[in-house]
Image (cartoon, rainbow, N blue to C red; front, top):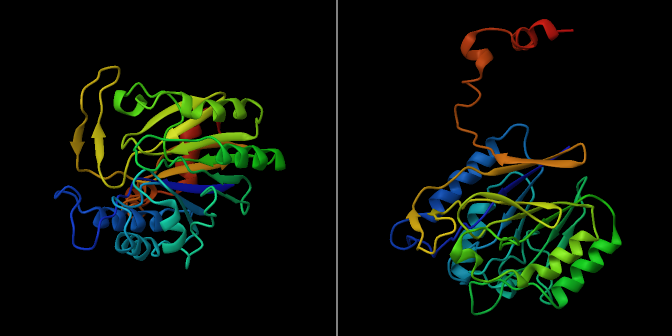
Length: 284
């Protein structure tokens, strides 16, 4: 059993700055880091799926590094459209968070009961994604190398979302990825971010979980070409629980008073007894 926590789109700005003059993204990220550290049982690993910073500058990555270093478990990161993969390699070199090369900006994590293949959909000069050439060849090689259950982490959602400003990049950028996945049933889940909204879909036969942002959310219409609304709220982390060969995914808030508010403690009753009552006539 492995517990992987995902957060995404942290959009850290330079120290003392508010994102769009409204949002303290550093404070939001600190809250999420504290929340992840409270989760029980403790997660095994954290994956941050891109847009680590708002503008790719060393000061912003330094602040991101300072905040995320508060995590009590291993952490890995991938680039988003706001990031600079090459700068990430340099700015995070003193950590183990981004063990990627300058060639593809991708890497593999083998330390758990599933593999993590960390992908790079960044395209210089655009918020739109790209995934072909050397990156796709790298993924094909990695998938051919092992049949172990696999999770793919990528920033942009490799699926049609029904949200116009997300889908305007078309479906061509992930067509090679979709074809490749039909040949590799060991891929059990794709996780992504980018949209600042939560959504579940699929690419080929593989589920895709798109998480909302720690920085802020976007209220986006479906099947209607209008601009999204801005929502300054942050959201809880997402837990991807690998159990019996598959992933169970969902929001995992863990408030400070969670332990004190357990139903056995609030009721003053034994938990085993409460479970027996839940089973009723199906009790052993």
